[in-house]
Image (cartoon, rainbow, N blue to C red; front, side, top):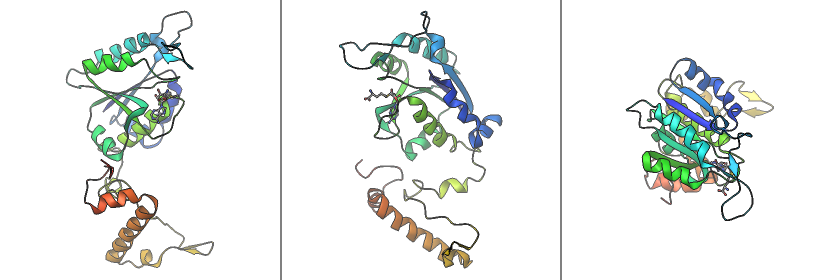
Length: 245
Ligand code: SAM
């Protein structure tokens, strides 16, 4: 998978050199290219923002630097890659594990990270008219910029790319996977810590009992913390979809 990111703060993406994704990059499973939007701004101050048309508070990202940066990336894409351009936005579709799985099948993702009040609408319209564009939110709150949202999505998507996580089994047994339930509580050694014991069943060696306990815990936790996921599971809906869908 190839990932291009456009941002005025490329330093945020140094984090993608660490841990599992860093190793996946070294092994050539994921290729990440980070572009500084200001390289596509050519006035004296390399400015990327201007006052909003119609007035109001804040600044809006100008279309010209975005056009130059995205034309460059998309113009160099492999002919059969059909890149998907993702603009992190609190006004977009909400990112879920289901979406992460869909996006892990893509060969080329381009993330355009907004700042200020966001990006001039014509940038979305221009690239939607020429290819595939999605506005994606990582939750119902407002960040200062798209960088943290892009990193969250890249990490969730990247770990689903085959070979990135060593043991694929560990991807199946997670929250929001398979039946959409939350994960059971986890324990390790020692068996006792500050008068708190690992549940006996986990030390029993009885795998059927352990599986039954874990399933029970998943249902109990999901019902307590995210009851809307439990009702979806009881209705037999596919994982990662909201009950309201
Ligand atoms: N004025 C915008 C609004 O009300 O929808 C918010 C702009 S926000 C301060 C600046 C940038 O942060 C956005 O363009 C987007 O790239 C990013 N951003 C903020 N919250 C986000 C979220 N929940 N999910 C994804 N991206 C977000």
